[in-house]
Image (cartoon, rainbow, N blue to C red; front, side):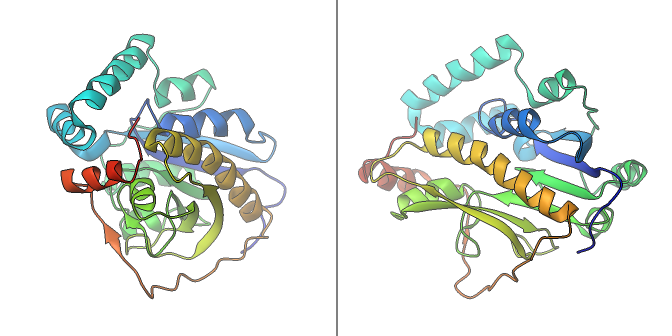
Length: 258
């Protein structure tokens, strides 16, 4: 990978509207990234799950159960009353927000072309990037995933790693290709898990430390010092959103949701 010299690396983020967990990534990244080496040319915030809020609420109720769902709702109402959001955080830092219905929409792709990013970084973006957007940034699109690949491809990797008794959550930054969670590995970190843990603690911590991993990868990309590792798809698996029996087994192991 060719180094970028004489200028800053231009970075565009694509993420989802999550003021509870994903925002923790951006709180760290926006506070710590070196402005003399990286220029954030835009932040696109998409609706989570691409579905009506009542469907998301029903999904969360089935996942968390009634008691933790009510606790989560109080948290959500609190952040909404304070006006916390990734978009607000970006604006407070003087960063441009770039509207995005779909990353695969031709109009959005043209907007991104005009921004001329070196890297487009997905942080919990709620859709698959297709060829059109993948080809725009000069150094490619990258994604951060809170699970060891290719075993924990798919949704909610922290939940599945806890359920399966892993000692670490392996946070992974990888190149994005048309096939889901299949691009070359650019960087990883092992985040220790407890025998009896909290999903809330693990998601929050992996988001915060994942921001630092992303920063390290981006700086190496800028300097041409990144060494991609091809992803061995042997033993690949894919996990969908957990169902109530999965949550029951999760709690039986002694883990908590919140």
